[in-house]
Length: 385
Image 1: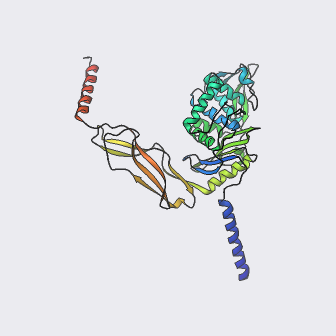
Image 2: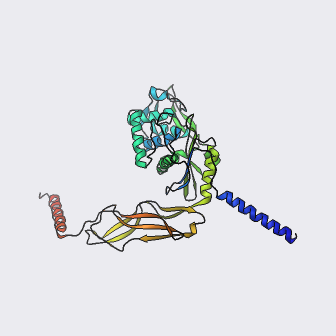
Image 3: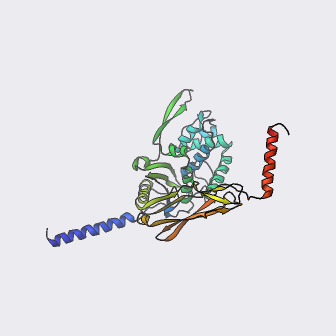
């Protein structure tokens, strides 16, 4: 090959690499009215398209219904299906009035087959009525931080002011995925539940997940589909690669499968999770000066992790600001230090270190009081009081 041809080939490879690198690093273009990509561990937003725009969430509503049911601790209870629940329109588990079925199987049918009748049955069994259950849903949403969400029903069929946002749905999902039972159900492609038919005969009923992404993307492990005329096609999805889990939400998106897949791939290709300390972990034991106890645990008050671009990952440094000892009194939850994450020598995140318990100050009066109480307990134990 001549030098000119070799030079031309080299330049061609260079420009091809540059072009593919530029395409590779660009976030996907999508038609969703609202979308987000969130890191599940840290809550960091990696992609945003109108993430705070209020939109109809369709059956992604059922994420909240399911987590409330799971957290109730009543999954093994048997529910009796009302005529009202059985008559619920839209996607259905085909429940019938008087049917006996466990709450666990209702939740499975709710998440895999998107049964609207299952949603009503869950609400009635747990709260006595749909309206009472919806109050619980809205309170739970606020406690999670989904401040732009307002539910009117437990299934997501269109109703006035039944609205959420891509950000809120990602936050609700991030919370729900911390529950192993929820995480296991939404990652299930196909399963069977016990089914009592109208003739009183028990048999297994097969359920196949409506979330096609579980078959389309190897890393996919959830979460929930949704479609109504007003909401359009919606999808809340999750995927895990190595130690990183991502949550994608697309609302009113007629290319929801492709867009969600591209969004998740973009996140894994472009961002890395740097893990330093677990939320709630004991970071250190700190000596307490003049305290009734000698030590107090310093706990990590938040995810001690950071998501950065792959190019920034080597540039992460961490500094810990924690005194060698602390003076009593110390109160549980009191900030006693912090972890600071730097990228390129710029502080980008701070996580507090807090006291894990209360340590009272050592004083003569408190020592005498403690001694007196101990004496009273001993005398009571001996039957002398």
